[in-house]
Length: 262
Image (cartoon, rainbow, N blue to C red; front, side):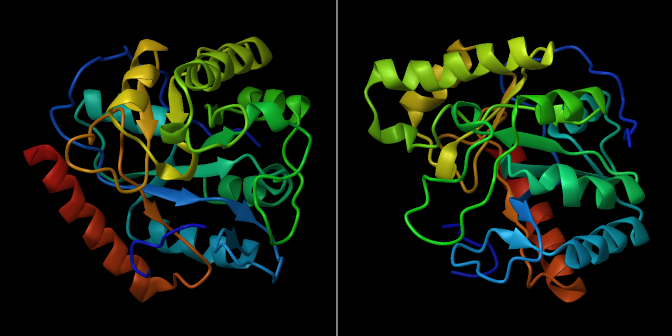
């Protein structure tokens, strides 16, 4: 289940810049978290946004001089101190509707994004959910297509399990193995990781760092974890109309200042 922070064709992006290790001098302004984009009305876990709603949300962003980009592009821009006006867009789990439904909307508004597929479930369904609708996941060819189209493909592990509750050998397979598989599949270095369910602790963060990731996305990491290896994100859902988006933008600014001061 997603916890809402407000409730209980090719897209051009800057070329990847140098990888910068260690603590950031300042946080990205806003990283938004999406999942599925479809007209599915059954949504018990609050992970679905309709294509019409996504279109209006991106119109809202562009109308305020903002543009959605991948997390990789956002961090590259931050390194050049050029992140003003950029919003990181992330899509967790790698639902197949990203390719068929979300991509056309993103392209219409000239936005990029990062897709976090569950690489051990490619072409299957979201069977980690105990209830709710079954949705098809992107397959290997889909990911190659997205990478070739300029979208960032990054890791969400192998099987979508809570990494804070598994032994070290499973943790390492999820973190190291998924990165190697995606790199082989896409032909690109995999820079990002997304913690399943947003859960992260010091052991999991250390495993992600040792695997060579540049950054990792969480949801609301504790102050002891926050940084490039636990970037906070704000969930965007179907109910997020213009007034709620404005509140979330302000929340993201406050959150970012807290990260910078930590």
